[in-house]
Image (cartoon, rainbow, N blue to C red; front, side, top):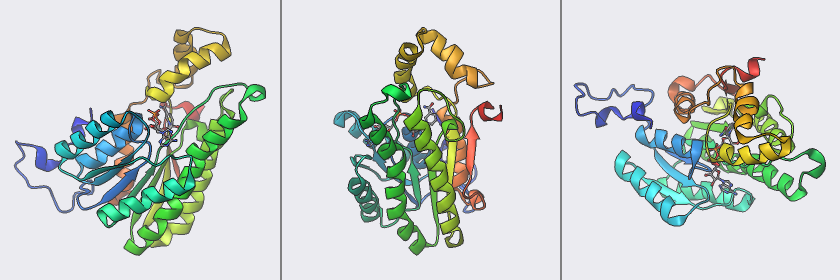
Amino acid sequence: MLQWLRKPSDDPDATEQPSANDPYDLRGQAAVVTGSTSGIGQGLARALAMRGCDVVLNGLGDPAEIERTRSDLEASCGVRVRYHGADMSKGEEVTDLIAYAKGEFGRLDILCNNAGIQHVEAIEKFPTAKWDQIIAINLSSAFYATRAAVPIMKAQGRGRIVNLASAHGLVASPFKSAYVAAKHGVIGLTKTVGLEVAEHGITCNAICPGYVMTPIVKNQIADQARTRGITPDQVIKDVMLKAQPTKKFVTVEEIAGLFLYLVSDLGASCNGTAYSVDGGWTAQ
Ligand code: NAD
């Protein structure tokens, strides 16, 4: 995965030294990616590390597996990789994650608010505890992390904030009230922060993927089948890929390509905007 993101210096056949002007050379920078023990977040953390960026991983999971991911990334990319277990539903832990990154690396250049969960249920049966949890993890955590990161980035005179929203930040689907509300909120937060930080060399943008086959999607297939009274195969074909004109799942690599552009110097004028990577879903 992500072979094309190899650092120039890792190529044994390279005849040229990496250019000091390579906009994708992130050596010397430091990042936090929330929810990076799995799926898209793990891919984005890897993309950053492969370009030389130090990274703090975060997320839930088996401690031994997380440590394996952390140490593999550190060894294979030659960067510093740390892990912080902040629960994204708890504001003070999110704030502590940002302070930890600054303490470990002395700086924070890139914040990717990626952690997210889903729950599929009709509105009249939607559990109130699930609503609160989804709003906390998918929306409020981005507020807490951004609130803590912006002063560090302002002091540095540069920063990049990228929020993983969703096609569901732009359009709705039934049975996902909390998720759709949270993701629309993430785009509102993105626009507001983008305006507030624009003169400080900082940008804030959102990426809006269509369906990517990660655990959050795999876990929905059975729920969607139950809620809609159809088979799991029908959920994939008639619900998920029905919305995506390409009829293909979006890949983590495709999201990583846009992400690297946004965090690079080339992304300096992209600000306060939501970028779709959805195979044409929201063009309809
Ligand atoms: P995933 O389930 O593979 O990963 C989610 C990550 O969030 C995991 O690392 C998990 O441990 C972490 N997480 C969940 N609850 C947490 C908590 N309380 N504290 C800390 N970490 C927590 O899902 P993914 O598909 O990689 O999703 C990543 C982001 O992309 C989410 O915000 C999701 O809404 C968004 N997204 C996904 C898709 C898709 O189709 N997969 C589409 C659009 C947007």
